Image (tube, rainbow over all chains, first blue to last red; front, side, top):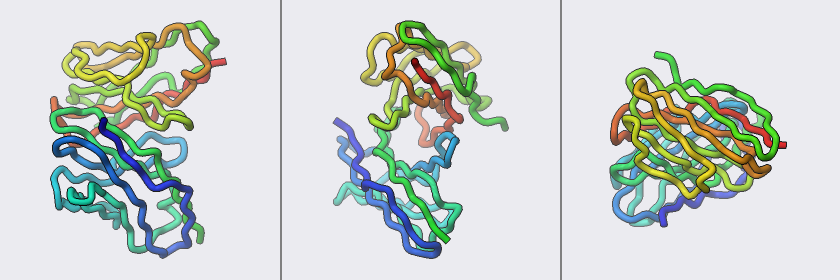
Length: 112
Length: 113
């Protein structure tokens, strides 16, 4: 079945460090891929998305590229800030469907 | 535009009781999806409604049910509550029949004692 495998956390980084959170997926066809972020006590916010192979999603300094050959969608940011501390979820949706399959989430803590 | 709203935000129920959670989507959005979030199982899809019809359903027992009204507001119901139903229940809305973005509400925190 469809699934998302996400890098285990938690991840602790110093401010201005480089961030990578790995995400790979299993799905038939051509899913759309997403990164969502959840701040403490809040719901999920869409961070970025990519709907076809080789697309690069970007937002707020975060980037991820849809790599069909490696079935991956790794999240990167060149310089993290304390305000980036949150839980990050990789997700996919199948073509023609609105339901999302989520990874387990990666908790990021950025220390000053 | 107002975001997705969910009521109540917090709820405490006893085993065996039933509960109804409510979700109001963003104005103009016609698709509503529900998710359960627990520390052990993570985020799991419950069901999705579009124009009052359930289009997709996740792998949950029949105790979990939902519906959508003509104004796109949605409710989900859990009957015969079990301790394992304690979770954050998230609702998300999307503009159309197939959308690339879902907008999430803050969730309802259900505690079953």
